[in-house]
Image 1 (tube, rainbow, N blue to C red):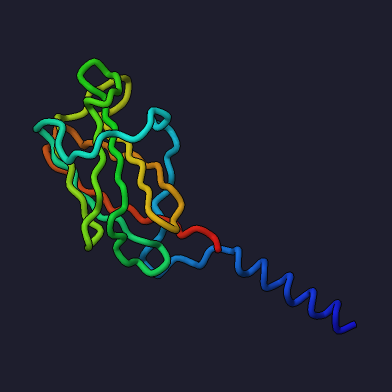
Image 2: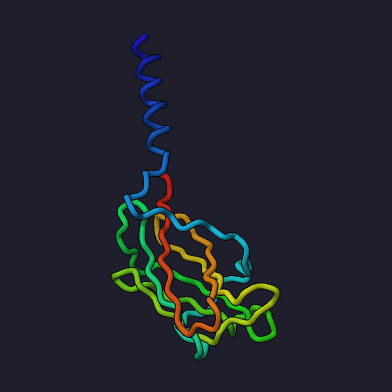
Length: 152
């Protein structure tokens, strides 16, 4: 009988151990947007592809709302012709405070409002696919990206 009770406790513990921890108050994970040109490999490591628009942001963990240093933020935007290419993409790494900056021309239009696709990769966190929409012809934008920790 003790063996059965112990097995039940162990089984319950395993279920609890694989359940993601709840998000820190005020730090809900950013919803994922899986649509985008992400099957093309990683863009080159660079913080600028031109001028006209600056996107800044911060990458945080939903577990404790702390910044994620050295997270990879991959950015893809359409060119004037509405197509994606390595020339209109870049990868930046977050600093110790989880911040990043990326500069480029205003994204091209192709049936949708101008936007930049983001893929964020950080150790022990789920990969986040997101989209930043440029409002009007704004020359600056900012995003707060909160990643979900991987289940243990």
